[in-house]
Each structure stands twice: as C-alpha cells, then as structure tokens.
Length: 511
Image (cartoon, rainbow, N blue to C red; front, side, top):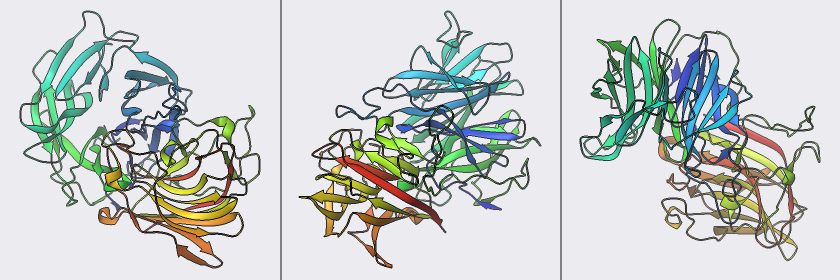
C-alpha cells in the first residue's frame, strides 16, 4: 500500500494516458524550462521523468526575463495528452503569448514537432473520434465544443461549434479544466468548478450519446481528504489493463503546490461513479513488477560530459526558471561545478537569469550545497533559495570587497495578486554576518506538514550548522501560481560579470 496523495510535489492540471503497459502523465509547468514534463509509470503510483515536450517555448523577451518582463503565473497551462494511431499529441495554451500549441511525436521521448492552432482555447481537451473527425472542448463557465480541421491547424469551416455545458448556479470559479473522452460510444466531459455552495474545488461530469445531443450530469466527486477544505479535483481518467478506471486529480497543499491524488471510479448505466472519498492508502497492480524508478528530485555532483554535438543536458530533475542564457552557465568549465555568470542587472531574485531549480518535495526536504563566491562582485547575491512570490534565500554577497552571508525574504503582503512586483528591492534583509574567505556551505530545510510552509536557512561553521535569520513562512499566491522551488541563483544589482560556482548539491526528502 502507498500513501495517497501519491506525489507530494507540484504537478497540477494533470492529464494521463496509457499506451499498452505504460502510463504517461503531463502537467502544467508555466514559466519553467524545459517545459511540459512527461512522467512515466507502470502502476499509476510511482513515477519518473520520461521527457519534456520542449526546451524553449517561443523565446520571447518576457520568457527570457528581459527588459523587466516575466511570465510568472503565465506560460503553458493545462496540457491535453493523447495517443492516436501511433503518435503522441500534446495541446496547451500559453497565457503570455495567448496562443494554442500542438506538439506531436512518434516517441514520448521526442523529437517533438511544434505547430500552432488558430485561436486560444482555455483548458482545452482533445478528442479523436472514431469517424476520423477531431474536436476540442474548452472554456470557463461556458464549455465549448469545437471541430478542428483535419490537419488540426484551426477550427473547421462549417464544422461543429457549440456550447455543451453552462454554469447554472452561483460560483467562485466556473466550470473549467476540461477532459474529454469517448467511452463505449458515449461522450464524457469532465470538469471542475468551485460553486458558492461547496466553497471548494469539486469534480463534475456531463455526458451525451452524440456530439449534437444534450450533455447532462453534474457533481461526481466532492472530497478534501480532511485537509483544510482543499477539494480534490481536475485531472484525467485512465483505464488499467484489467479494465478498472482511476482518476488522477490534484489537491492544493499550500506552498508546496498542487499535488496528485488517485481516486478509483467505475461506470454504471453510462455514467461515472467515483469513490465516495479519496483513499488515504492505495495499491494498484504494476505492469512491470520490480521496476526501479528514477527519483523525481535528487542530488547532483555536476559531473557531465558533452554529447557528440558538444551540448550538455542536465539531469531531468532540473528546470530553469524561465528561458536560460546558455552563454552564461556551464558544468564543463570546471569539473564538478555548476558555474553561473551574471549578464544583466537584476533588482531581485525573481529576475535572476539561469536560476536552476527543482521542485520542493513534502512532507519536508533538505538541501545542502557548497558555494565558491570568489568571482562575485560588489552588489552580487549568490546562494540557495526557496523560489516563489514569497521567497526566502540565503546568499553570499560582497560589499566594498568584503564577503557577507545574508538571509532575505519577501513577505506575503509585499506581493500583488497577479504578476506585477510591488517593489524591486532584493527583499527584506533579516540577517547579515561577515565571513572570512569566499567558500561557504549552505543548507535549507522546507517543512510542508499540515501547511506549515516554513523554510529555514543555515551555514556550516566548522562541524556545526547555524541558522541564519528567521524561520520564514511561505505563502502560495497567484502571482507565481506554482509550488515553491529549491533554486541555485546569482544576480547582480550593480555590475554584471560576477561568477558563482556551486558544487556537491545534496537533496534529501525527509519523512
């Protein structure tokens, strides 16, 4: 038996498919690069990274953190994942470019071919029908059904285009998060919403015998697993090889983000019947018993060898915060070191280019890293952070040629709701100590039990660890719309060209 939720980390807006004996899952990755992670499993419970759909999306100035622009809370949202006639399809929108993207590949590991679909389709879901026609459903509060051209490049002229579901009761969030299926000749639209009556996310389903017919239905699942009235909802359903059905949904878990939950269901009289509650423990048969999964987060000694083209691909556990500047980082200049150089002036952590991140993992996690800051310049900050709107960090900085360790944090009240930074200071400095030399070993711990959402920062003093600054309370907000990330960073506030060397990165998930 395994605990449910199955992954205590940020994997929201899930869609899941099965191809023969293998399950694949995609989720929202917004401003992170590479983006649109694909996970692989043989039992729906244990997962590993199979690939990412793209390394760079459109490489816009905002995606590169240039000219004071960013795509926090935007980027790619809510992918739809399908496998049809030997080909994989991923469709999603990006809320910064206001475009709809279609990626296709013959293998889940790529290469992926990119094209655009004319129009913008919020939380869309793709359906290949038995007669060769293809459809999307999408929307918020009103769910639209749209027939696509044969090449999927846009709406089919004269094709089906209608509203199939409308919100009919008072709501905080209208129907959205669409997932569209045809099962045993019947059409199913799975949706989430937050009605004023429920006050939390709930799962709904509407079904019809034909695409021209009436879609009828309503709530099918309403449960918070006893967790802060946080509803479990939104995601895909998938059948197992032995014919059982499972929904892969998510639940908000504070600063760590939105985490996956499994809920069994069955079909009765042409309609889904979910379990009354999400089980706290779950077991499903594996199609490959004894398979060893690669971890979703992990340590790195930064010992990399370039491929035949001279390129280096970091471990799949890493993602960049926004599009990286490949001229300003290296893991080959000095063996065993992630070296990053600043190329612009940045007012704070959120605009730091080449911040290298991994998901924070609950119930608690601990990271240590050694930093050589001998290449830093006055006004540079380099170190270890929990990255989100209400970030906390520990950094080595220089002032008049002298080295200091500082702990900075940004409080919840310092943030706007959507996207805009309230001020451009590096953050509130809560502690500062002088250090001798330029090499320090840093540690951070994140505690997410019962939404504690605390992070603490430490430095090694001989054989002892000493905390610097306060225990900082992180708050999940819609400005980043993402669970916190552990990150390695450098940013310059006065002069570009400073360099930081990180080595011996150690990541532990604490029980």
